[in-house]
Length: 99
Picture 1 (cartoon, rainbow, N blue to C red):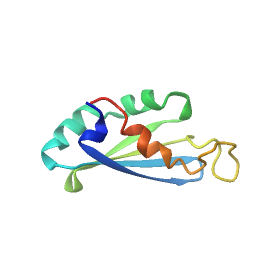
Picture 2 (cartoon, rainbow, N blue to C red):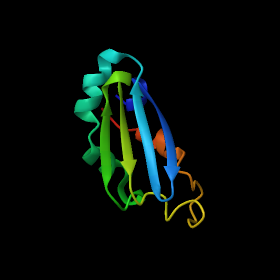
Picture 3 (cartoon, rainbow, N blue to C red):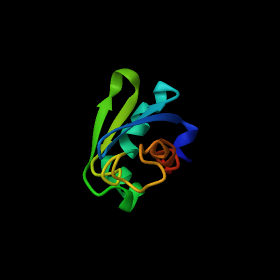
């Protein structure tokens, strides 16, 4: 199934760093999220869009995961030629992952 079937996401940015949080709709699905949504899988899913590291932070009290994607925005909002300089579409892209 697609991640979007059990979760929702939010994203933000600071410079050339994108931040994506993924939260499960039902807390019973949190262990599945922790098991299947690893930093390595997220890194592979984004491919060449992310040139730096991907770090995952677990947020068990709110049943979510926070991913920090370094060098992911083409140099940052004022430097990039990307159509989505803030990386807002990243939150939708992560939800397209199979879990």
